[in-house]
Length: 115
Length: 114
Image (cartoon, rainbow over all chains, first blue to last red; front, top):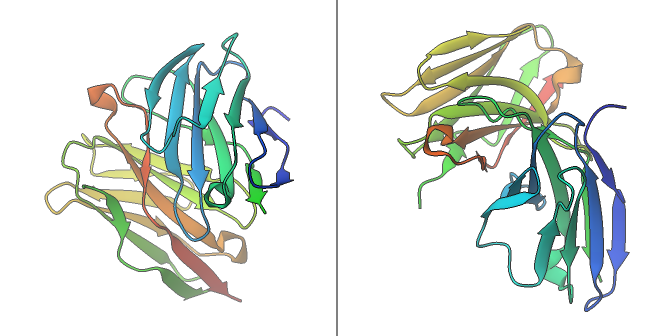
């Protein structure tokens, strides 16, 4: 499978616990994005990496959220002290650098449920 | 704030008919648009894109039309099939401004009647 891979697919955690998600982008893609999607809504942008540099962050990304892409390949998204409002699908996408285009390909997502 | 939105939340079409899904955007600075298809429990799947210097682009069974005058985007699906049933999102981007984040609308659910 050469698509974007996310792990785990599902995560149930108790409020207050920390969780970490992993994303493996398409191998030749230098850009990686994290989005969050709640039921019935479109995905909302969280953050974006070009190689290992985090270049854009949404105001949705509170200080409890941290994302890394240490070697410019896979990325992790950590949520500390989870809250019930964090329950959502967390989507990762990747793209190649193309002038004027952001043809992002998404993974299957990690569905987080905070109980 | 400015946002991308959709005219209709649901659309039911007969198998074999053509489908048209509409999207309105309000950010005049947007210069790149994408249509995504999302099936239940899956991530969004890229369908087709269009840059603001074009008004029409065709793919396999799909056509995207862009009307910058009225800030309107549409996705046309020819000969709709049961496998086309999904939620469709339009997304906008300001790639020319160096931004790579996509702003998505709420989505239109397409149901194909066999």
